[in-house]
Length: 200
Image (cartoon, rainbow, N blue to C red):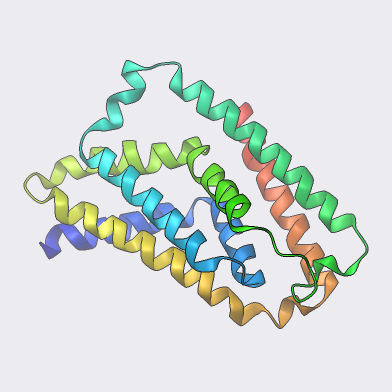
């Protein structure tokens, strides 16, 4: 089992590290200590569903539904553009709402909807989890379950470490300047990802 579990874990971890927008959202929630467990759980469970679909052979869905890829690509780009604008606008504001202790908390429902959008509207997630992991899992015939469990474990470990480990950075983000820098970086990163989706 370990001969398939650990390759799945390492590959899953390397793919998660490459996805920027979702990770930035989890980091922000961790810094603000808002709904951290729920956000991490939604991200990890979503990955588990996508990994299961890939290993089960649903990576061929794009061949059967050619309209799916452009819908996901343009939908994801529009969402990221909107969130980038929101982050950059937040960086320009000059008031105390950027301070974690004083900003108004976002409701659980709205937070989870944003989290689901970051996860399910990102075409790269499907390419990495469903297509890439699914195709590589074919090398582990008879051990696909172990391979999938390894990738899922990496997802759970990464998201919960990122979400709950972010609190260690809270002293750094006690100032408005640090939050503004984070907002600018997040906004620019999401803008870059959106442009890459629109012009691959």
